[in-house]
Structure formats: C-alpha cells, structure tokens
Length: 248
Image 1 (cartoon, rainbow, N blue to C red):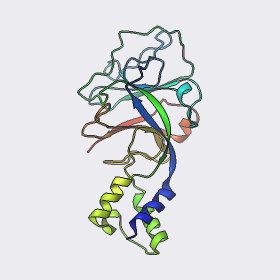
Image 2 (image 1 turned 45 degrees about the vertical axis):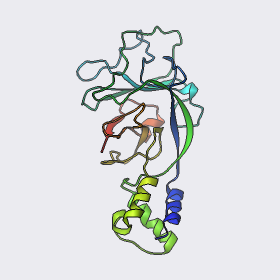
Image 3 (image 1 turned 180 degrees about the vertical axis):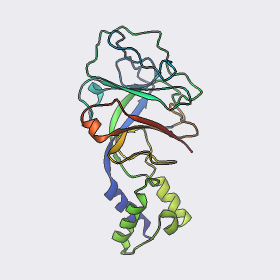
C-alpha cells in the first residue's frame, strides 16, 4: 500500500480549520482572562453561580474572553464563554455565555478553584492563548473507513472492503493511528474518538480538552469534549451543550 500518498489524500479530504488552545503558566491569568481552571469571572449581582444536580458549586474548567480570541470563528466577537463541570463522577456541565463583561465586578473569593484529584482534569491553572490549527479526521471516527476507501481508490485505483484493520498491516495501522488522532486541546475541528462518537446529525465539536499530563488529565490520558448543535451555535445558544469524558 502506498501509505504516504494515501495519508496525504486523507488529509486533503478531511482538512478543516480549528483553533488550538495554547496553555502557559508564565503569564498570570486574571479573572477576566482566557484561562484553564482558577477563579472565574462572575458578576454575582446578575445571576446565581452555576451548581450541579446536588446543589454544589461547579468549578470553572475553562473560560474564553472573546476579546482575546483574534481568530475568526463562529463564536461571538464580544463577551465571554465559560465551561463549568461537576467534580463528581456525574458527567454534568453548564456552559455560560456572558454577552457583556463587567470589568468592575467584585471577585467572589468564596468560589473555590478546581481541586486536584477525584474527577477533576485540571492539574494546574494557566493562561490560554489561541493559534490557528489545520485539523484532520480521527482514525476512530465513524467516517474514517469510508474516507480510507476513497483515498485508496484515488491513489491506487483499487476497491477495498472493510476497514483499516482489514486492509492494513500492523505497521500501517500504527502509522495511521499516530497520524490521525484527532487530539489536541482545541475549539471546533474533528474530535478525538477513543470509545465512541457521541455526535448526532447536525452536531459538532465546540471544545475539546486533551490530556497532557502536566495541566490536564482525564482518567488515563483521555479527553473531555463539549458538543453543540450547529443551529444553536449560529444562534449563540449555549444552553444545551453536551459534555462527555472519553478515556481508554
């Protein structure tokens, strides 16, 4: 199999734009900054703080100040988006969009930072910046075998049946799996699929946080993903975002 040419063809067919999240501990992130973990921006005079189904305050996972996102995306151009999750085994989240940010809000010191251990993925609070990312389909995506079949046909002219493990040697499988991981912490793009693809028709990846062992750790090097309906994203409606953890 002409694997390098087939890989290039798969990349050509599935290439899409995403936004890579770049984490840094060198810069101290304030409550108005884009960041992972830590004390969130929250204007308590306008709305009650997010709580889980047991009434416990949900710690901040990530917040994005759109004024610091200098890359064109379907997201709003102003305001802030925050992701809160339960620190228990329940897979609960609340995604909050602040259309306006009050720079003179009073920081609530009673809001605890995301604790380490348990089901928390955050190991270290850190600032977040953004870079453009060319993104490719994950080898475990439900559409990958079809893409592989079309790529093989284009490169070699051969029609193959079955999927990657039916047509590739162990070495070829390893190279394809290493190339098409769907990994990285990012906004949009192709999700990293480990166990199963949780997207339904008309849904897309909003946010993915990937384990790096230094700042984020989901179970045994898994990912946390937030899925949104494309129509809801167009309307800037983040009220029904789905959240799941996918681990090995």
